[in-house]
Image (cartoon, rainbow, N blue to C red; front, side, top):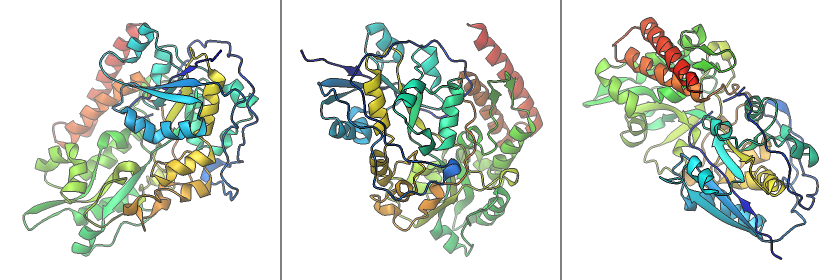
Length: 458
């Protein structure tokens, strides 16, 4: 008799959360033929794992090759089936020919609650750090620690901050593996720097260095207003290099008035205040267009994936994100995507085999070449980054892989509430509606009330 397995992946849109109280776990793995030992490469901490061996797979094929159906789901994300197949599905089908891949696109009527109510099988959940809270909200979390031990999977091969975040979120366990990631970098328009005779940004710069450079590049010429630096303030604050959250889940404390948080806000607010205040609205909402389309911004601090596949009509390059003086050498928090096994899955070992493969040298090299940031520390995998992207030829690829990244701060639903209040405060500051102390104090009070109200709903 042919056995049909159903394996689901939930993918969520957003970013990073940790130290959440774990929910209940469903026990009992379905008996499946043993996988052979995972072939894990020895990694090292902090981002340096030199290795020259040929790529290895994360797990050997299972002995059971009966047909299975793998159902992937991406809640709150605009990912289409075609995108998913290109990113992961096709590679899974090639590696596991007995697997049929199905992707359920998120839409009205296919939210997580809808699928659970309808009895839709779910096996693997793909989440970002800011959306992973849904695992525990719907009791879908499953600790894969025993599977990691059983198949001798080596977590040391992976970016440490991504592993540590998940372990914190799972209360010391592990709810999934980081398959891909993203980081924040500083892009710059070489044409504009050449036009104004100003030296390019340098690796190892502090934010103070870049601020002075931004002042030089902010000017009006030929009727065009040029800006020294543009960015997405919400991303910069949420993923800051000091790892200070808007709300600390562990202590139940709103952090918006904390000195470190204030330092982060002040650092980025000053870049919005170099030009006349009448431009504040554009700087808050049109950062991408100002750099990429209008070519009116000399520098752009944003996700490293921003220029992947973008046919730029100007000469640009990248450096690592500037450093806070109190955290020299520390890159911003990464934004990994995790593949987690759902608690209600009937095929947990098959699911673990697949997510192991997606963290193998083989697959990670494949996605790295296409411009998706790998989660492996392996230098060979990292050096292959964006090789298929013609516009990245000659670019400073090393900037994507810092030796040290900031720990990922918690980003649960309460943090998201507080972050929204902090975002409002930032806008009030740069538009001159409130001074910094008043704006942050009001935001902290509003965040406290909103968090308490949300907790009272339980």
